[in-house]
Structures are given as C-alpha cells and as structure tokens.
Image (cartoon, rainbow, N blue to C red; front, top):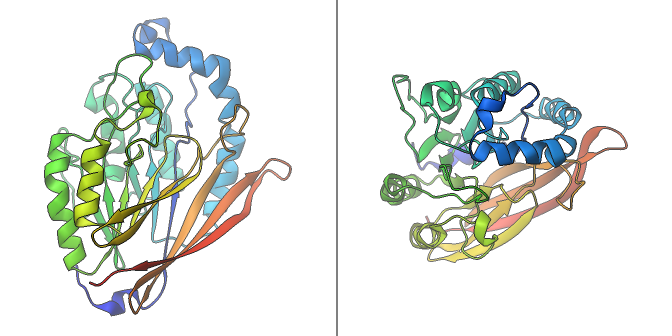
Length: 315
C-alpha cells in the first residue's frame, strides 16, 4: 500500500449490491426445517418467492456486464434460510458474476440462520470473503475484518452474521473484529487510501428496528468516530438510505441499498444497486454515486438517481 496520490490519478469504480436472496427452496426436505429455518421457509412460501425474482437477478447480471469495475461488493443475504444447497446455488451465481478477485462478499443474517457445518456452507464462499493474498483453505480460515486494496481504495469487510433466536434478524460484530478494526483503519488511513467499510447491518445505533438492529452498533459507531473512514456501505433493510456520521476526521457517508432482486411488492424498495466513482481532489476525494434501478416495464436496470459527494480529509 502507498499513499502516493498518483494511485488516484484516474477515477476508480466499484459497485455494491445487497440481499439478492437468490436461492430457491423448492424440494427442501421437512427434516431440514425443524429449527428457525421452518419460520424462514414459511416466509419464503408466503411472500419471499414472489418478491425476490430470478428475472430481476438476470437483468442485474446483464447490467453489471456493461460496467468496468475495480471491485463488486456483495453485502450479504444471498440465501433465505442458510441451507447447504442454498450456499451451493449462491456459489454458482457468484462464479457467473466473476472471479473471487473481482467480488468481495460479507454474509448476512439469513446466511447464518442457524449454526451449520462450515465445510457445507461458508467454505463454499471462502475465496469471495478472503482478504488479498489469503490462500489458506484449511478449516475456518476467513478472518474479518477482511481487506482488499484496489487502486488506492481499501475495502474493509465486517461480518455481522451469526445465529440468533427465532423472529430475530439482528447481527453482531464479534470481539475479534472489534479488536482488529482500529489498527486496520489507522494503517489504511496512514497509507492515504480511500477506506470503504462494508457490512450487512446498519452500524448506526437507532436506525433499525430493535429485532433487526446491529446489537453492538454503539461500539462500531464509536470506532468509526474515532478512527474514521471515507464511506460505509450496508444492506439488510431492503430500503435505500443515506446517513452521515460525524467523526473526528470529518463527515462519513453511510449508504444502504435495497435488495438487488426485489419487485417491491410488500412496501420495500424495488431492486437497485449503486455504482461509485472515486476521484482524488486537493482536499480529499469526490465520490459520484450512480443508482441503477430495476424497471419492470422494460425488464432491465436503468439509470436512477445520481449524487456527488465531496469527502474532505487532511491526510
């Protein structure tokens, strides 16, 4: 890593999508549902299979193929109830999108619906969750926070996915991640990198319903306020949101995207994802955000809203 400004001489581009819920539960065996998964299956039968559609994901893939991205971030909930067969479906989908070096993934609460053998579930996504130069594949090897550096941008992934009681969609950042995050934020700041922190749950306390919150959001928020970042991206709520957190280093944009596969039938936003272009300026960076929105009438993702941010820093 280097702080040379020439690393940002040309705008760098990346995208974020979230909550594709791409898997199908057709043919699931009854014995797989004697747990919290049973409730999730009923939700899929009653509502989610009509809301999250393969034709939307196919349109998403066509639209992504038109973009030249330095990195694609996927912020969790690829599955409905975290069954091994769903992890395999998601692995195949990820391979269709691109190779592991192009796609960085953090899991969501649906992916960790219940405790399950690593080898049958998250091991299938190992390469997409790994940091740069992490080629160890023996056992549970992914250590979050993950770090990937692409042309002057540091992508820092946090996992909030862990099993929770029935009817709870909360997440928690474990103590190991909390302990490692400050040094990682400081090191990437010292290198003059544009730091993008991405996770599934919203890290700002009080922004989500109690049963859907990040349980230790105050601790994460305090670390961000102290050590800073340039952008935080998340999903989970199936709605687009923009918030700002005031840190000791300046204003920090916190941006949420809705589900990448949703038709918006039950009050949530219709599917869209965001593309970002980052360019260094004299006092920090300029971030251009292009929201790509699904239009059912044409069956494609099209231009939505656009926003330009000035992110001032005194590195």
